[in-house]
Length: 105
Image (cartoon, rainbow, N blue to C red; front, top):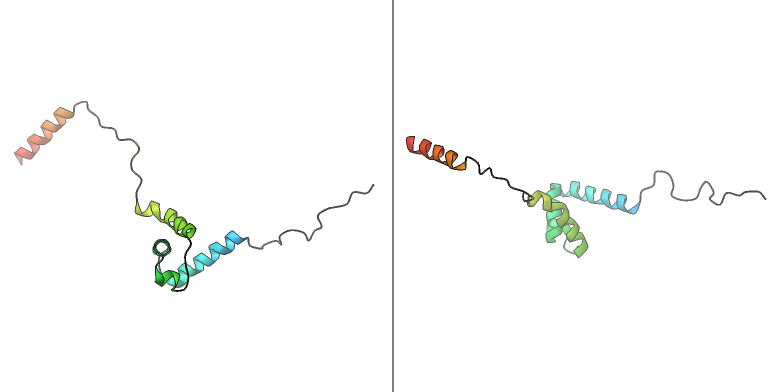
């Protein structure tokens, strides 16, 4: 028996072609550039369904709003510190010295 190639050379995605996610990202980047806003302001506009950014006829899905919120969140709300350590040793002495400096001034 002769082995045959099940996948011809011209099968599958053409070299250099873009997938749907890449096309969507390019469209979003072009929309940001055309709007003249910063990417942060653009995402905030999508999240809030701002008519200037979205357009009067267009409607943003809840999924798109949540994605925009997830992108914007680290820039708006800082993470809280996970662990705070306070040296208790010598705290009374440091407080007394600080109090004396304040009184001396």
